[in-house]
Length: 197
Image: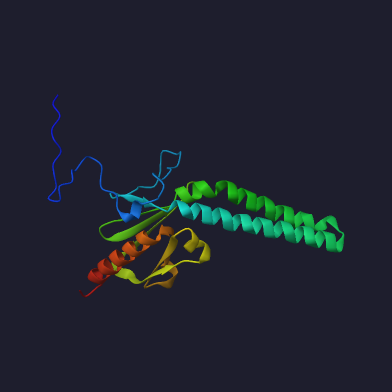
């Protein structure tokens, strides 16, 4: 068996067997966990992109802050009224928030999106799965939004509004560079795919 030299591109870089990484894949998780069952949803034929790792921290911080606020409110109300009944609803809410904190890393890693030939495919969930395909020709608005915590971690949300308002899609936790590149690509493709063009 002989080793063949790698092909060179006009710029002088070599092309290997691995595809080149784009801004869509910078600082993201490596793969989407698949369900343990044999009958999973089809993943399409393109490349799946994932969310930025900073999005996990944003979700953990915001859920943790909610947990601290509920705990502080329960302590304050319990001390002010001198009755223990407040711990029943507070305990339920705290248990739910702890559960959300525990499953957040898996939820974030299960989120992915794929640019297909005719539509944008979004997938989320492991146990309760949801897969949404948004045709390029139906996109009317592509918006980038980010709050203060998002800006601190360098991430943004990409909101896609379609002709039917109920079918809008939000891609959370993209890096700022990936959100801008994806917005420009989707606007260009949507403009060329509109009916009557």
